[in-house]
Image (cartoon, rainbow, N blue to C red; front, side, top):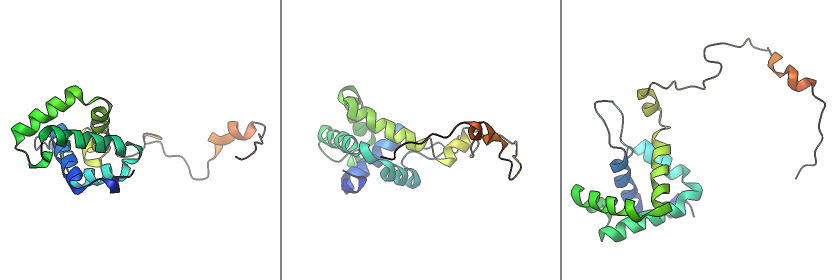
Amino acid sequence: MSADNLTRTQRDDLRSIAAMIVPASDEYKVPGADDPAIQADMLATLGRDTKLVAAALDDLARLAGAPLAELDAARRDAVAQEFRKHGGVAAATLVRVVLQCYYRDDRVLGALGIELRAPFPKGHVLPDGDWSLLDPVKARAGTLRRAP
């Protein structure tokens, strides 16, 4: 199952629940998890979690008696609290998917003061063509293995 199999209602509910998990903040200048770029990342990277996320969204809709996105904020919050108590692995997976996509967004990382580049070499520029870091690897005896 892939994210393409999520219905329009499930996608809308995912956006609604994501906004509840991480709302936007003007104070910290960060988007909410319902931001279109973050949502696109979620849908693009669901992969093996698609089945559990779909199950979580279906459970939320069943508890609500209607699509979650169509409920008022108070009712949506009550449904989410009930789901959190009994949602099990599907609820945990839904929250993990939202948070992992949210915290890898460049805007969020920048707001947290995390540099938007690999931590190595941390300002230490390696001269072009200096492959001396590989000397210990080159010194090892070669190992031949059968390819699978």
